[in-house]
Image 1 (cartoon, rainbow, N blue to C red):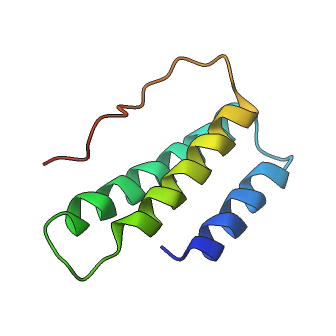
Image 2: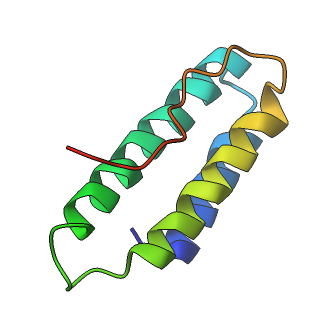
Length: 82
């Protein structure tokens, strides 16, 4: 994912008032899973800069926390391993 694209997607999700907070969280969690998968793939290849992916993951986490700071945290903040 492109970092600016991630920011745009996050903004689109957060500003779409047609979706409930729960739906927004689901969309952000899906994005988070996709970035985590990219991080796992990057750990096996030198062709992907996982530092940028880490920044994207941080932005998604901040967006999730901004819409639902008290929600149960299902995220595993450990290393992305297979």
